[in-house]
Length: 485
Image (tube, rainbow, N blue to C red; front, side, top):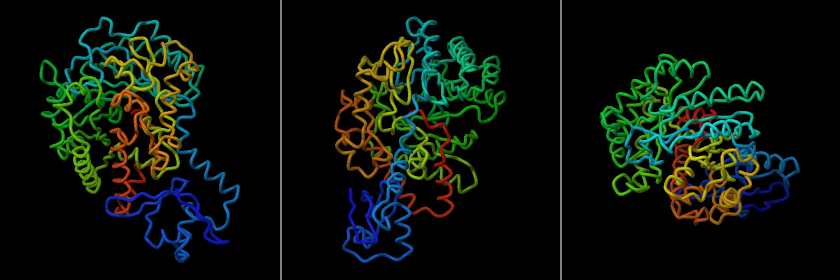
């Protein structure tokens, strides 16, 4: 952290510097604003160089690198409010509530993060736990709530999804919250009756499409070997009955995906999607067990991501609207004063205080990844039972540990990091990777990946032309759909 008095007219405010790969010095002020600093800028800010031009001085002042005098109480309050705005998403109570009705699924994906079950017995939530979960959602103080149904494949137990949505809707007639329902499914079971119900209740659908048919069918096999075709049938039915934007898709990057970045992006364009989320493989469930055949290095993912991102820009330059969701999450952190609430990059951790998972096994977990660890036999992140009060869940010992392990102002490595206003440790991933939420942050894959990604997007901002900058600012606007991890 740098900062010093220049003279009676100008005071340098606290800021941090990070060297990008091309040698550029990136400065980030305590307000979260940034500037690419020349050697002359750095000398000036260090108090040993000449005062820059009035234009440059005004720019540094507007970005809170310099104050025209000793910072006033108003300036200090403004800086505190700007910093707090970056973290306010975790201060309103859990806004994302994930209900897992069943672990049943007909797919045999090698990278399945929850080790899905082919049987319904002992892998489905009880009616009493479902009712308690629906009631528990309203203990959150958040005005806007997203209720997401995960699995397994929740449409295999549509009866439970329907029961939950009806109960929450009836309760909300009194509570009057803004509620968004999302059902994450293969869509293989989707039918007209379900669509009619979802239409009445304004539910959205989310599915997985890993790319072109040959890649999707390899990554997400089913016995009949037509997983892609069945998912497409579901997408078309949803668009017909619920509207084109009623269904979204995301992909998971396996080793097989790495050779096809252009083809994957082109497939999303061909299918008419306006969003694509280039996600890395998460090391949970079957994905961890099959790491030798599915996994790849961080460097491999970087290359793949860069190529896919360039293809997304190519289509935008052709007039085809396509947003890369990972980019929008990080650009929101960099360019917007209003955080979209992405759980994995919150300090304190969004796990638990930003999101809760009501699992089929009757337990509550602080994140989807935490319940995935539970499926692998590590139950250390359970917060309590479904039906326990929100107060008791959020004061559970493990929740306190998750918070303590994610406070960037205290965690070694994060405290001095230039990106600590936008990023944060992921203690759940640390638990998965090292068996402790307090593992050294710099050793975690989460930290290494996001350091590179923030570097990448600041570099993109530095070299972007006016058209691309407009696109990035458009992506950075909070959309409310980046809450889940």
